[in-house]
Amino acid sequence: MTKPIIALVTDCDDTVAGDTTTKFLSHRGIDTAKFWGTEVKELLARGWDPSLAYLKRLIANVGKGKPLGEVTNQVLRDFGASLEDSLYPGVATLRADLQSIAAEIYPEITVEFYVISGGMKLVVENIPSLKATCNAVYGCEFEQDPTTGLICDLMRCVTFTEKTRYIFEINKGISPNNMNPYAVNTDQPENERRVPFKNMIYVGDGLTDIPSFSLVKARGGVSFGVFNPGQEASAQRALVEFLSTDRVASMHSPKYGKTDDLGALIRAAVTRMAKRIKAERTGVTDTGAVRLTPAD
Ligand SMILES: [Mg+2]
Image (tube, rainbow, N blue to C red; front, side):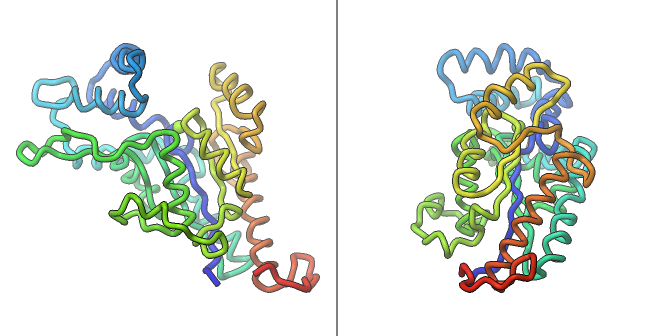
């Protein structure tokens, strides 16, 4: 029998932290309105994929004398390390809180935390509290020029449907360090998968999270959406794209403390999952009733 694991899987930008890519661009002195509103928009109008479009423009601005200057992978790591204050309330202690809630119900349970971002992996994974509490961060990655050391090419691009690839990798227990991109396609019976979908909670905010919301929810997990009540466009999107289409259980402000509505609901979801896992493993339900046939 596999070890019981509950996984919290989240997007990064505007979900657990402010927009890390825009922060990086403005930190390096780029006019972000022009970058997103003109440079990237032009590529989108020509049919570019949104993730590839922003990454292409970002790389094009790297170099001596260019707007972003000399950017190496180490520059990205160092910038990520400076972003602790960008995390939303309650994120830093969330995994530890969820772990103690689950362990109190059934000590064998491990709670894992994954971030899947369309932003830059080296920035996101070096935010101190994410580095300390995430099992893995997935995001876009760059190749460095062997001579100059500057980022010069795209190694990995995480788009909206690509996010579901990493959810399946978590589901099937494929190591984030695995170098075979096709490993995720290996057939694996549902009951042998390391993290069943019914033990997953997905949290995201944007259009790029829609396939992930749908995948996790359709397979028995729980999806929550976050939005910014201070922005009309964000509230409109929450209503039209997420709530009206039933893609998420509910929408909330990105606050993860015990007494915040989203934080409380994530804790309630973990509690419920932990009680179900305990009943499946021991045959004893929460109320002390004994099931005649444990599920597995
Ligand atoms: Mg986002």
